[in-house]
Length: 367
Image 1 (cartoon, rainbow, N blue to C red):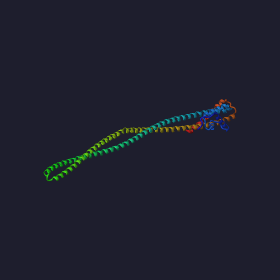
Image 2 (image 1 turned 180 degrees about the horizontal axis):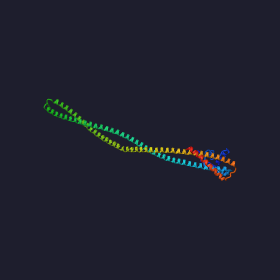
Image 3 (image 1 turned 60 degrees about the vertical axis):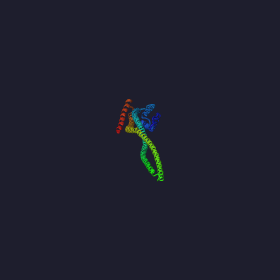
Image 4 (image 1 turned 135 degrees about the vertical axis):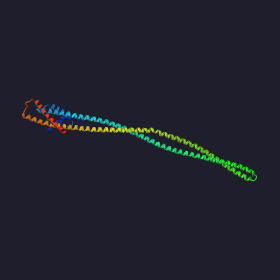
């Protein structure tokens, strides 16, 4: 990229080098000698100041060169300034628009990322709650199975108690029958006491032993029935606790419903942000297309600028040729009869006409 500014001394040295090489120190030649740096308006101003400091040269050649160089320099400087101003304004506006939309897109992406993170957190919380719910359901199933088993055991114990009660009633009936038989036997033995005393005593001892055995068995059955009743009470307490755990599990399941609603809201919010992000992407694509069109316009302006420079170089060549013609005419006819102002005016009109023709020709070629 060329330097931002040049010095008058640099322009002076470049002009001297061109003169020493036998070349005409035009604005383009001086700028090329400076390494294509510096604006043409600045170079023209410095060349004009240097010519004013060195003083005017003899003849009409100096007047013609000043007029044409001043006209061409002002035209080139004005064209360069307008082109650079338009390009700079368009680039600044476009850069500002792109920056604004990029910031908006970045904010929307950040918001979508935050919503996505909240959604992931909600999903993780829901997964944890689902796992907890699964564990609670498993515990509930286990407790339900255990409660069912306990209920079945209670039913079995109740059946056993009923069976034991029937067995006790049967034993009592047997005891009653034994008593009745004993009384009958006693009545019979009274009649035969003298005859069967020994046999009667043996039978009495046998029946007494059997009676003791029956009483002991009945006492043991009563103790077992008491123990079964205590076990039944304990199982009923366990069943009550299992029902309490089931109620707590149902409360935990009901507490999960707000989390499901919050998750649904977060999902809807994420979908809305996704649609907004798609719209912003479409806007960014439109801006990119606008940027490409502006770049094409900038390229066209640069091409027009190159055509104007080419026309300026053609005009400089035409001016140099006309200067040679004027010099040869002056040498042929000697001193002019008209005043210097009229001669300069006519030469300026011819040079302007030639310059206009040279400028119009590249423009037609570009079109």
